[in-house]
Image 1 (tube, rainbow, N blue to C red):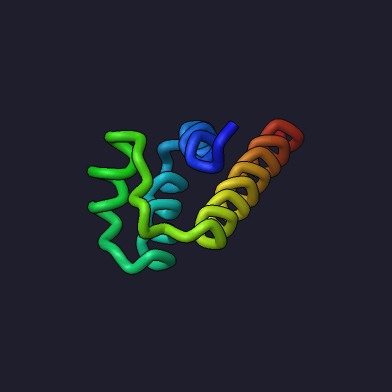
Image 2 (cartoon, rainbow, N blue to C red; image 1 turned 90 degrees about the horizontal axis):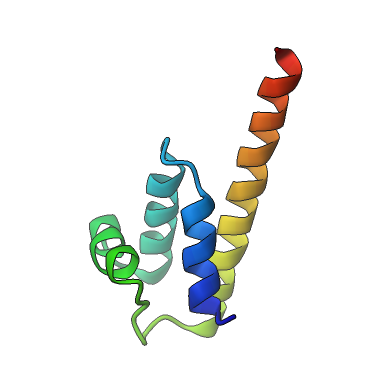
Amino acid sequence: MTKQNNIFELYDKLNKSGARRDACKFIADLVGVKPSSVKAHWIFHREIPDYVTDNQLDEIIKYLQNAIFLQNEAIKNIEVVR
C-alpha cells in the first residue's frame, strides 16, 4: 500500500464529527494550503500533490493514526460508562 492510499484509508476511518475537519486543517497547515483546498482537491479527487514531501506524508499518517486511536479510546470510554 502506498503512503497516499494509506492516508485516504485512515482519513475515511475518522468520524465526521469534527475529526475530518481537524485533519484537513492539520494537513493544510503542514503543507501551507487552505483547508478547503485539502478537502476539495486532495480528499475529493483522492490525489496528493507532488510538492508534498515524503516526511510530510509520514507526519500526516502519524496524525491520522493518533486521531483514530483517540477516537476509538473515546468510544470505549462511552461504552464503559453505560
